[in-house]
Image (cartoon, rainbow, N blue to C red):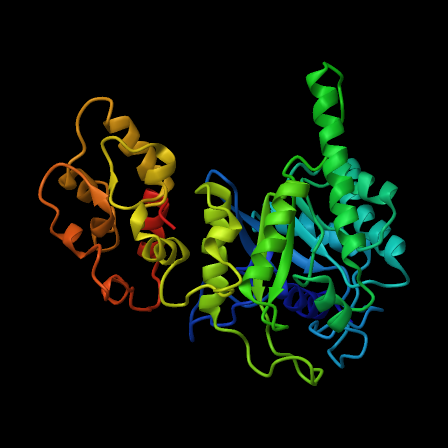
Length: 417
């Protein structure tokens, strides 16, 4: 099999990994002469400062000895198979980089022979790039479940980011659909990475010249909708991972139906809005000071598909509002629907010099339809009278529509989830 054929199979197989989700589109315009969106493995990831990084995103191989029922690459699947050698991945990375197509590599793999052998192959790629070719670009390696601690430690020396996929939200879900994978093994690997990062940081603070170890931290991915676990279970697992292992990100991937699937799997994919709501709830936990039990509880275990999680919380806790923007602390303003983290910071800065007026919110591009019923500020605010209306939820409901590039630009400016 030639290299292009392997690339087509293994780049397509990598599209299910949500941590770099922009590859895999196959809608190149008809008769176009420049530019392609075909799934040939180049995807985009975003740094915390908003910079877009192009990555070569591929699997080393899609052969796998495991039989995870939700995975298209499981051993019992009849999907076309291919395997790169480590040297082929190294050469592909260098070729793409020298042509300025990519700035880094995202490398995962099915499990072949055993976990340690597969992890050694991934490390071989990263080590060769760093040592033999002086490659300074971004490298994200997927670690293999049950790989030896020494191998994970070595992977962290060459990679910028490591990730260990939690796969499914609960241990019973794993037992049902991926019996070879054990949650303690997965979280044990996360714990080891965290401990090693802590040791390195401690040594550096003490003045020792410690090596770099996964400086971009670790992340994980959870499949949503393959089992009937509600959003409450998913978010509680995510909250534990953030707290116990200090992950940078938990990615949520809506389950994709696969050919010849097990009868225990759903026949349809969950609504993408559910995945979107989980990301919004995730942001509330990480940046807005919400506890997971404030967002979901046993009485309402699933997120609303009609309202974003912050609006849903505000509608259930109207006694908390209105929030006075001229006197309230940051924590209270963060809970106002329609006001994002950046605008909270701007409001607090403005308060040093003047009183906040309703007109100021419009200048900050705050979504007044969402915000006006919940805030007090100088000036006329006709929306405030709606706070106690029984049909407020319907009035502030956003109509679903396809997002455009300009919607994303507005969100980037305001920081509003």
